[in-house]
Length: 410
Image (cartoon, helix red, strand yellow):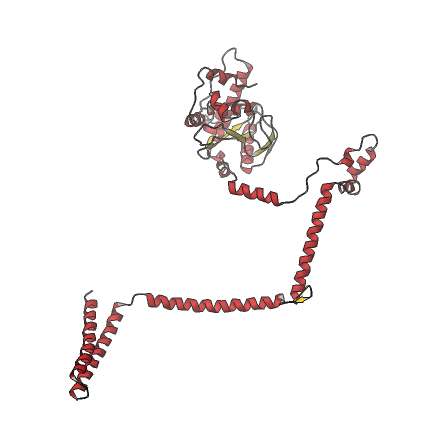
């Protein structure tokens, strides 16, 4: 129904090499894709469209922002389904023969807008089967779109017909003599315009979780790998010899019993598998280890382990509580000393300093006067001793007076 023959014909002559910006621009300015495309980041975009069976789908397109052009990676997000073009992780692999590698994508000469447009049209005309919506936002979108579509008589009417004020650019109808493939593509484009007119309304705006890309960084991947390597689990058997050895003619009754009463007939056969036996051995080993640890804990409660007395858990708990209380008291003392230290290190008030200087100045003045009185009364041992003591105390007096004067005029 759809192939790459048409775009290859348009580009086979020139094989022009496009830049990444040209690819992104062709995608974002495509007249059909633009109304229903949302930007997640500089490398990832979501396009919402409706298939012919009225299923709302979201195509996530990721084109890495590298120095060289990389092939786009496309995924159907929010669903689980089956389709020849998608793998188990819902990645689009249908164009692997053209964009399987970055070199092939560059050589093809096809713009990203044309690639996404053709992928969307193919899923519109060939919807995935066994579709299960796993995202709540997409499920609500599907319910709203299905409800609007069910109100039309033929179930395929365009939403733009219901809202004539919404402007869309419809592609021209196929020319006379067009192939069935061209007609199908035109029908798909009309269907896509129908869902675009509905998606453009605010009530259908994508939920926030559609605008973020979930990816594991290198550290998380290494942690997961290391965890899996440390798990020593038995290898899962791919076959069960006892069951496979049965034949429909000879063991039909046995197989019926296994199906009707698995606990009696099937479980004993499962217990013969090597994987089950290894799991039972691991379980038994873990139980024995847990019992041993529990016994040690019980002995430690009474202060005895393997016949060797030691401090009981209760005594250790009391000691810990005592140490915690002592630590609390010492922490309070330390905090009080720190507060005093902050007070001592804080600059003093100038008025308080002047008051203390005035008091110290008077004390030095009185001391010098007493020295002079003693010399006049004849109590000093000589003139030199008197001058030395008097000048020392009177100098301190004048220094303190000078400091007071400087503080007053500062």
